[in-house]
Image (cartoon, rainbow, N blue to C red; front, top):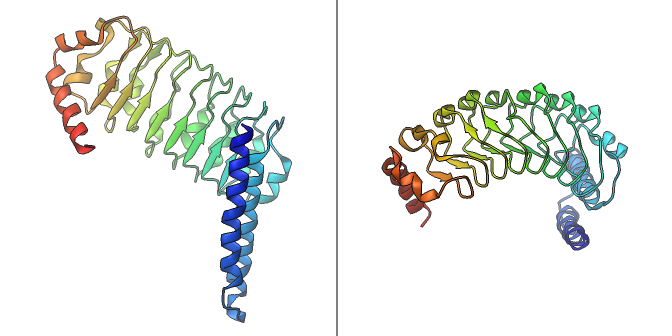
Length: 270
């Protein structure tokens, strides 16, 4: 943690030096005042974001951030001891990325739904059990990462997130994947290391789903919907570490169609 923070701080100041060097060589004129003012504000926010990200052992969300609610785009307070995300988080209307991995959060305030520009929400390694219904109001969200929490049920309402690309719910306590999963727009769903024994056929109807990870769960071979193999767009179906041998998938209807998709996708990246 110490080395990571040192790296971020050192490189942040190098980048700021580069930015200010650009400022010092910028042609000075009256017409530049507006640009220079905005540029200075941007540099200040940039510096503050990195200084905040380098603090360790914060026990609460820094009150000082409230002064930057109209400008701040990125907040990373990972690896601290923050237990509560304040309702004032809803005031950061320009926020695009919020990361609080490795803290002690047990819940997420409903005001999170006010962040209409938020594209990345990463809350890995906390103690969250349930998510607020307002989460489905984050219409710009592309990445939702909640790995390593204490979530016991597949979160409802995520189908409203029409731009969601990645949903990471790995290392939780989820036992089943419900039919409403069919509404998800995600390209990748990671459910590794849960306790899943029931998988709805709805997962094969996810319109954009390409990668489905279900490693180290409690699935029997009979619990795997053959439609995932035969009728879906899934080109990577990862099920190692369940209650059957992976090679048994070859006996299921639709396996040949799945392998065609898998091979075609593999060729694109080789």
